[in-house]
Image (cartoon, rainbow, N blue to C red; front, top):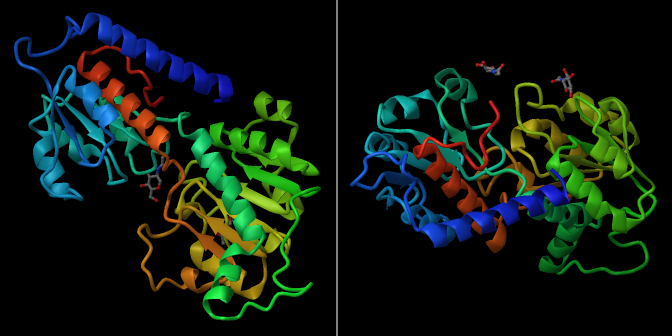
Length: 354
Ligand SMILES: *[C@@H]1O[C@H](CO)[C@@H](O)[C@H](O)[C@H]1NC(C)=O
Ligand SMILES: *[C@@H]1O[C@H](CO)[C@@H](O)[C@H](O)[C@H]1NC(C)=O
């Protein structure tokens, strides 16, 4: 899940493109010889790079509506050979049932799979792809941005300007230092490791992480594995980079927030439900912690009148972690390759390991 893995993926993507260019052929195993397979792409705004890849070998259809309704997607599921599932709508047994005999493969265009009923796919041995790793860099960049924005009170400062409250002076809007700080990363997977790599340039004092097992890649980055409570107690900055599962649901709650330093900054680039948001709002209001930088929240989209948005010490951005041109292109291409491989009954480029 490190840099070389990421480079390797991009290299393999290039090789796939070259092979496609040379052969221009549909694999012999492709179903319905004579007629091209049909793929449903559930979101019209999916990057063309991915759509074009599909069109080399398949016909592509989209739902009429944007955003598509669930009923529309379910109805189309029964008329296609593969689905590129773009967005976080629940992907479950209902979709597979409605897909029926004809539907052979689905790939999401995301790394987090919390909206997918994995058990259903495992039970049916149904080919399922996803797009991890290629978004690690973009998400880690965003995490660092939130760390600085929250720690240095960017949102509060902007509000002061908007409200003609620019005071200035040696004691105004002082934030937290990064140099010399202790940084804790909860979940040292691909994104956690990429954040750790970014932090190398910041002269931090200590890097801690917690997780189910120790990671040699993390130790190589100078990170020390500690129990989660110790990480929360010691860290000046806490990054959340774990997948959302039943075990990580509300992992940050009233109890765990109370363990953190009053000067601590919490950054969440994983999933909103890992944090008990009510408890976080209370903690930000009472000064239990200093600030939070959130790319993810509950619910999404967040209503404009949500209390979270009224807090000067919460930097909130609308789930933009992987939102760069190149990253989304890469994700769309990988998802497309997954679907094509699944339809051809060959191993997917990036299968979900269920
Ligand atoms: C997670 O929790 C939900 C409801 O709380 C339950 O239905 C589901 O089976 C659980 N999943 C796993 C993998 O334990
Ligand atoms: C808070 O989260 C911790 C684990 O992170 C868990 O052990 C504890 O039961 C949770 N407490 C509440 C009140 O949810």
